Length: 260
Ligand SMILES: Nc1ncnc2c1ncn2[C@@H]1O[C@H](COP(=O)(O)OP(=O)(O)OP(=O)(O)O)[C@@H](O)[C@H]1O
View 1 (tube, rainbow, N blue to C red):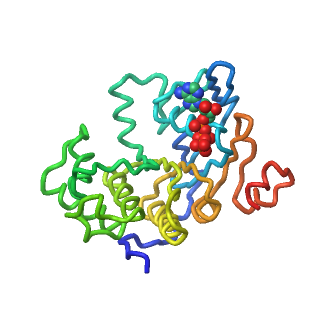
View 2: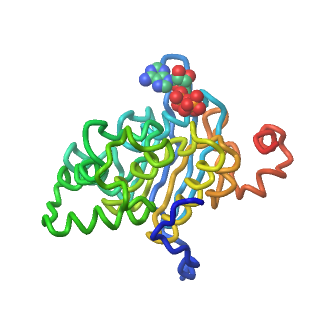
View 3: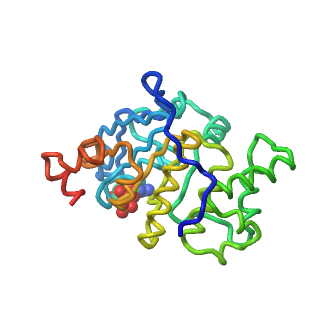
C-alpha cells in the first residue's frame, strides 16, 4: 500500500485563458571547448504544467538545469524565471529568486546527522523571510502530511527507505511553497512500485499547489505518468515536443525510439 498522503488530487482549475509562462529558455547555447552542448535550445514552461525533458546520456540535460539555477551561464540566449531575466540579477536577487524554485536532486541531499524535523526546519530558517516558531511547526507537519510521512518526524534519514528519503526531500522542497520545482531524475534508483508512488506524488503536488515542474527523466513509465508535455533534447536543441502520446507516434525514429 502506498503511504496515504494529505494531497487530494482534484481537477485542476479550469483554464481562464492562456496559462502564464513561468520559465522561458530562449536560444540557449553552451559549449565547453569544442563540445557544443546546447545549440539554440528554446522551451517555455507554464504555471501548473509538468514538462519532462528527455534526452540521451550526455545530451545536456544537467547543463540545462544548471543554467536555470544559475550554476552555469549560457554562452548566448536568455533565461527568464518568473518574469526576471536571470542574467540581470545580482547575487541577492538571484538568491531571492531561487527561493521560489524547488529542487529535488537525485541524491536527495538530506543532512544525515539531522532528524527529519531538522531537515525540514533547515530551509525555513535559512530563508530571508523569517517564520514565527509556531508557524514552523505547522509547516513541517503539513509538508510531511503532504508526502504521507507524518510519522517519520523524529527519524534519522538513515532509518528511512530510498522512497521515503525521496518523499522527505520533496517535503523539504514543498515547505517553501515553490512556484517551480526542478526534478532531477526523481525515480532513478527506486524499485518500480516506489517509482510509481513518487510519480503519483509529483502529480498530486502539481494539482494541490499548482506548481510548474521541470523534470529530467528517462524512466518512461514516470514520464508517461507525470508529463503534460515532453521535450526531447537532441543536437543541443529542443528537437521535438508534444504530449507523451504525440511523441510516441512521431514519424521521426529519433523521437519515437525513446518510447519503444
Ligand atoms: N563543467 C563542465 N565542463 C566541461 N564539460 C562539461 C561540464 N558539464 C557538462 N559537460 C559536458 O556537457 C555534456 C552534457 O553533460 P550533461 O551532464 O548535461 O548530460 P546529461 O544529458 O545530463 O547526461 P546524463 O543523462 O548521463 O546525466 C557532456 O559531454 C559533459 O561532458
